[in-house]
Image 1: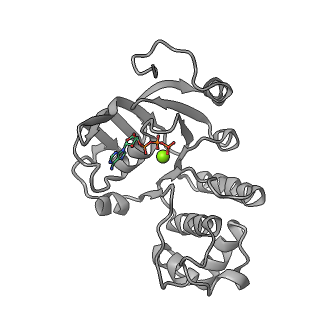
Image 2: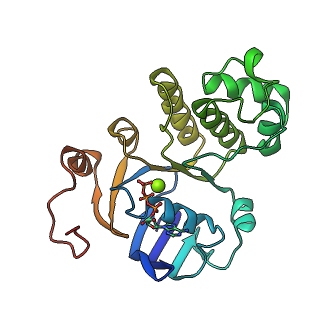
Length: 239
Ligand SMILES: Nc1ncnc2c1ncn2[C@@H]1O[C@H](COP(=O)(O)OP(=O)(O)OP(=O)(O)O)[C@@H](O)[C@H]1O
Ligand SMILES: [Mg+2]
C-alpha cells in the first residue's frame, strides 16, 4: 500500500465533474509526476489532497498512512506534514524573506535560511532582508516559496508546476533540491507540463478529463509529450 491512496475520487464544481472516479497510489519516498492537458484536473487533485476550501465536497476517499484524511481540515493535513507549493505562489506582504522562510522552518536558525537560499540558487546577502512582496519577480517568488517548502521538511509535498517562470540555471538548483527532498525521505508529487521536470520523477501518471488514463515509466508516459495526447480509447478521450 502507498503512503497516499486516492480512491475513486469524484469532485464536481458548479455542476461540472472535474475529478471523475480517480484512483491513484503514491509510494513513500518516491518522486511521482502527474502530467496532462490544461484543465485535466491536476491542480484540482492537488487541492483536494491538501483539503483546501471548495475542494472538500467529494465522493471517494483519501487515505494517508493507512487512515482516511477525508474529514481533516487543511491545517490538520498540514500538521501531518503534507504540503503544497502553489502553481501561482501567494505573497505575504510585509514579511522579509528571512521571516517568511523561518515561519515555516522546523529549525528557525539564520543558518537554515542562508543554507536554503543557497539551495535554491539565491544569494543570501542579496535576498535575506528583501520583502516578500511585489518587488520580487515571479521566478524569485517561486524560488522563495520552494525554499520555504524545503525548510518544512515535509513528508509529502505536491509541487504544482515547479518550473513555471524558473530560468535554466535555477531549474537545475530546483532539481537538486527535489533530490535532496527525496534523500530525506519526502514523497514528492510533481505536477508538470515539462519533459525536463517529468524526467526527475521515478514514475508518472497521465491525467485526462479528471481521471488517470495511463501510468508507468517516464518513457511510457512521456509519449504524451510527443503528441497532443496519447492515442487511447478511454471514455475520457477528448472529442
Ligand atoms: N474553483 C473552481 N471553479 C470553477 N472551475 C474550476 C475550479 N477549480 C477548477 N475548476 C475547473 O476544473 C478544471 C480543472 O482545473 P485544474 O486547474 O485542476 O486543471 P489543471 O490540470 O491543473 O490545468 P493546467 O495545466 O492548466 O494548470 C478546469 O476546467 C477548471 O476551470
Ligand atoms: Mg494546474
